[in-house]
Length: 442
Image 1 (cartoon, rainbow, N blue to C red):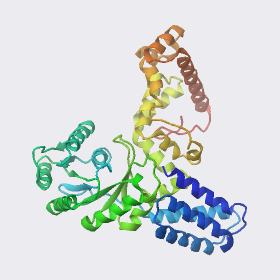
Image 2: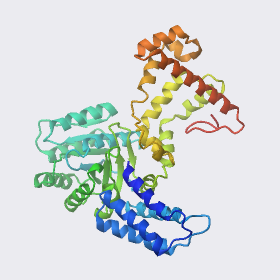
Image 3: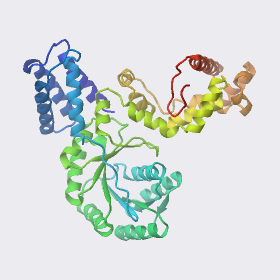
């Protein structure tokens, strides 16, 4: 995420390395590099210039105390300005109504249908609401089917009228259905086009006028950069939407859309989305995103994701097993499953300060655990609960059953033993560490 921008900003800050104080002379090269980095990230030149002018004015007005280097001070100023450019603070979703109606708009291919499913999942599992998904794309049959499949996957009802060719009627009928079924939020997935056209704009405007939604969310493919910002402006002029959603942040994102869409349309970014998993939807926090862009990590979001997945009661039971050195393969598999639900592995590791840069060239796939899971699944329940029973004969069978080499199984068993030993040693420490969701120590 924003790897190229992060690297170029880091390079810009190096211009101040070794300087004892900030002056107009030594800051000029840094500001120039920051502006170039923003333009390369597909930020409009006018916005980039205004941004760097503010950074320069703030930097020259600051006094550098002896404990902070000019480079560190500049990093803080840029972080604060980036956060402000992206909105300053998070913006809450208005999901109150009888029912609350949320209209989803955007171009075809931006990820509207997938986001609709993710939003329904978010509102159901994190907000305790009862959502109804509505398939109002009457032009693309695959969109209706996709939404039906997503609804089934997350356990949310989907309103479908495949024979109806009136999107406004579908939306109005869905709101009535929601009331009759005691659904307290309606999410309407509308049609998109490959480019802006009058037919699409008129239809979504008619839906808006017919149902008077509490929220109109414009979905933006973050990989399209400045084009996405221009599209957002055209939609906002017509719809006056209430918020923006940035999708596909796990792709080759240059950053232009994320950095400047708020400045351009004066509407907040409410959510960011990455990947296809229904759990990969996050509230947008400008300051946290600024920290990630500058390589500072995002420990707050990482801890929140961990707490969402780690059940307190399960964690207490696991802690007792670790204390007694009874951690087994069943426990290990459960931990892997919970980690996978937290999101993209490389993105998660990038939230740890300093790690993002270290792993930028490392290929970390979400399939990384598949081999391990295959080996565990090839064990009998008795073997999973009693690792010490697994002798060489059993290892050979596990290797055949998982499609792995015997050497792979041996290496995994060795690593598992080392991990157990480490847990045992840490458990004996007087001030044991604490894992997210677990008790006082681990």
